[in-house]
Length: 243
Image (cartoon, rainbow, N blue to C red; front, side, top):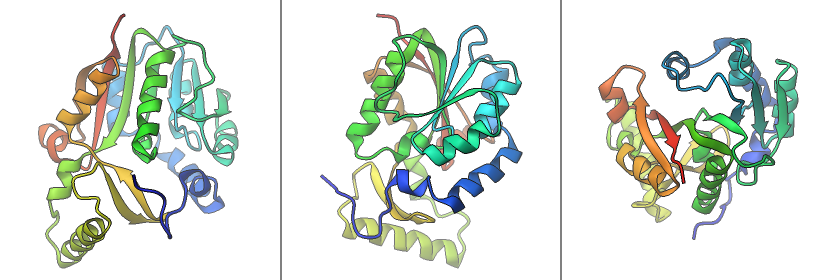
């Protein structure tokens, strides 16, 4: 089992820092990502039941969904993020952990977990706990919309520039030294230092969804089929099965 190593900053600390909160506040100007708009336009959000926006950050998605007339509740583990979200929308925003949601069974018609938030949960038992909680708080036939890192992208060097080649080589050397080859968590280097992020192929993600009682419906890609197969991020839509 991997534990947090020197240089790794816990997600809750990272997402509560002033600089990161400010960055997420600036993202509100972008509104919904293309895949999120597509999910709304294709009817993958239940307009007749509350929407749970997990990992809502500073309210980018919460505010945009509320403006479209949905009854939405934003949740984030970072209290500073939640305060920023509350400043952006009249929607209810709460500080809570995705692995222990403070809602009754079947409370929501749709759950959104955007910006690869599910992949930040560590270790894998936390990811599994969150998937179980999402299933629990969804109504029967409720919809789960989320994004996840695509591990197929790790095999590509694109664009094939010297800088990209160096970065890719450093990535694999770091993870080989850490014993993470063949595991879903890879250590990435970013504004949070060096930290583990979950990566999974679309077929494996669909199997994982089924194991938690979801029926995968579709994937949403920024530029179509190639993006869905090899893009760095894939958006998934799944339906909660009935017991």
